Length: 346
Image (cartoon, helix red, strand yellow):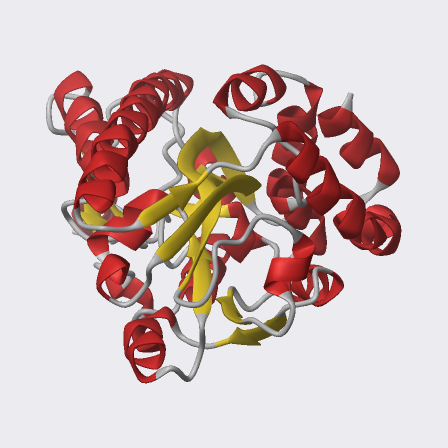
């Protein structure tokens, strides 16, 4: 009798062990934090992707394209849901990057300007007059500099999937056609909330101020500020032509976008899934850049038709602005890192 009980106990234990092992080998789904070990191909994942801009922007359209390709190539095993308008961070772009670094959000598209809040070295990409035009952008963004930026991204916990484009930042105002630093004297200009831009506009003689972009239209309308700076798409979509008469196309600061994924999440995926994600991101970035550039040409024509006065500075005038900006380079060269700066200047 005693031997029968022992045998029954052994059989039950074996059955329970087999059941537990079977559960451990089933596909798992990460709930937006990429916490699955993903060590084998075939894992299921449900990821979240944060996008700063609206669902009609080239950013979001590229995010959708990216998600669709990953979903298709994995037969629906990996789903990525893009969220527009910084919904995952309650509208706070800085927090949006922090959530990506922590792994609360899995993927995101954010400007390097926002990344510079976490690490000032990212500010090198926004340095004044670092890039001359889009041809110069394409050459330098295919060089050594971006690889060095990628290393910094990995340091803070983000695996880079490449760079997109928000475009060159242009200056608008309601007072004067800006052709020289003297024209900026005393002009109240809203700028992004990073110190480098504040220092730059002070060097140029303007009166810079920071505020939430949601407040800019009203501030311009009421005359609290005279002008602001942004890429064409933002100027156009925000209808700033209704409260701004002049725009200076000086390409003073380029605004790249980081297509990023939380590094721990990426490292947890199988090699096959990593390749699918990298390929889909490359295709989405190419689409985003092409769309942005085409849209900008159309938007410029529409803004001109709406009455905005466009001014394109001569090369000599640009050199005057560059000379006035030199103290910013003297101040930030050590902060950005001389090697990193040289990689973009050479």
